[in-house]
Image: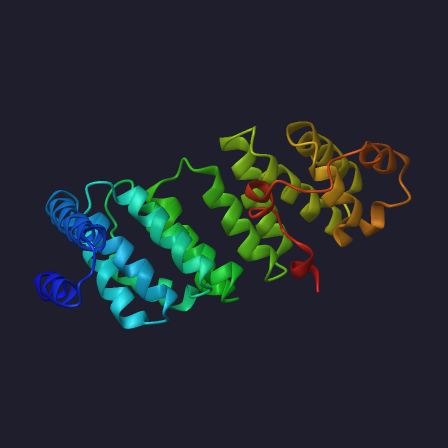
Length: 261
């Protein structure tokens, strides 16, 4: 193709610089092709993953599924691969297709709770299937019982079913595993408030805000604390000036106003 173009340029009397530019483009493309072949040989799973991401953006879900399945099967870093595909599916609001893929990828081996946890988050946060989400979180916990975020996620799925006592149990377990888990402590405070245990709720909320001060802004507008608005301790707790923009990484594991409708 490039040879034909060069011949045509010469027939048309095109200058040397134009031909040199065309040949330079040819050389760059050849190098890029060679580099891509080398990458494909060394990192086939990465190539498949990015191919899957490209298919997602064009809504070719079947092709994306196949590419990501190959990437998962071929990777030596399963956790990183799962995080990548979870982020990609979530960004495209394609959680239904993500769940189908993860169901195939599910492995009950040691350390594989993350697969079930990602599935559970998609089911709970976007698809609204709280029963299935709770079941997936429980599988994740069985496989990896040391992850506080799994208990917190299970608590959220139970909270969204208004099973507040059961949700409280899971939030508390999360804080026992990781006392520094601000999201779990905050969610514990919400459950306690809804159960009418105001003093305990205030204590847990204070602990959460000490861990993450920006949660005071969330608490200020949170309907779960409506019954506590008249408490002096509550007003004092949320009175401190905070940044209006909450940390998204924290907020994603804290119940939101959508959970209260």
